[in-house]
Image 1 (cartoon, rainbow, N blue to C red):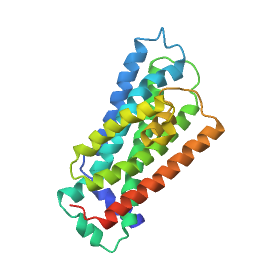
Image 2: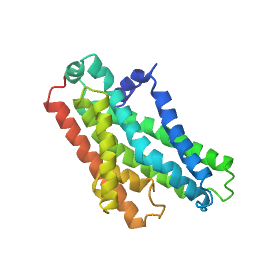
Image 3: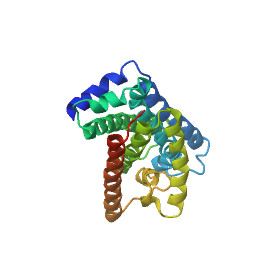
Image 4: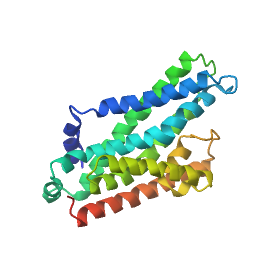
Length: 241
């Protein structure tokens, strides 16, 4: 497993993933801060009001797209050189290959989450928010990362099967709107993209109860296992072009 993870890292060298990981959180934060700055008369709840603005664009749109881009990228080299079958013929468990790619995506998204959190704190200081920094924001960011792993397990399965770089990203964007609809219908726990909305407190800053938090992590764990098994089985029993 560790060897498989180590084998994935060189593929990131000389790539533009670092630029993508840095730019999308910055863009979403700038949009959110712009809205917050010009609507401060209505947004009177300090850090929480700022969070409603920046997390709406980041957690609901930019982060799912970023996850899809990361998943498509870690599969790009195999598709470009048509060497999936060679990799699958190597003496490495297919499960290790998939989990290594999932781990790489998880590390990349963790970096994006930490960057977003730091940028959010910096923006709050620049906007002169005087209240103490709410520590639950860190929990929301962590829950967002957990939900991101769930989405990544699905997106990796799509990116492994689909040679096009853009198609899985388009599917992710469509799934975002489906997830938003299910969240509104109070069915958010039943869809991975809705779990991201719930986890990051994108549309409501009402804290989850202990039971709701437990159910959130259980559902993510179930989805990660099921989607990983699905992706690994598709990779094991079907040739990848």
